[in-house]
Length: 217
Image 1 (cartoon, helix red, strand yellow):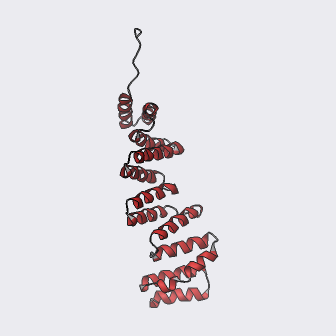
Image 2 (tube, rainbow, N blue to C red):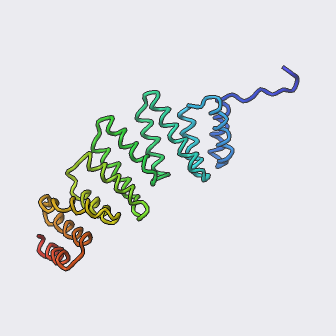
Image 3 (cartoon, rainbow, N blue to C red):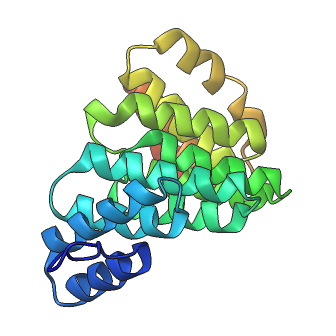
């Protein structure tokens, strides 16, 4: 070894320094450190998971998503489905309009036999898709929810309304017609009549909604 030469930092030293930089809010330094550590071990799920949110916070969304996905896949490759699910769940918090993230979380719930949790995940995701430009994503999440549980009356009404707004009127009406026989109780009848009035506005549907509101039928 030549006099004065310096030994490169080890991978663990790089991670320790990056952790310290992150704790002090020096995000770019932390990112640099984690990336150097990943050069030595590209599939380190823990480091990828640390890097991803920092990339998101420094407005590097594409790189952040790639890091989240790589972290989740690295956990899956080792058989750690719960850890992969936690990574995807964190990603949904930072990128709530990334449709595939919600679907991945739901899929992992299904692989564990947790159908109810998968349904809840898809419906949580749907809440974020409320703008007109987000409507295709909302429709996808609602369809997949009903594929898991076809008994969800209000989810059906939501899908009918979104389809109608997306100019898929024929399918919306086909879904809406049998729902009258499924409505149970005053609350569901009122919601059904209100949806009918919005999908097929007119005097008749308005009066039907008004009657349901007053009389509950």
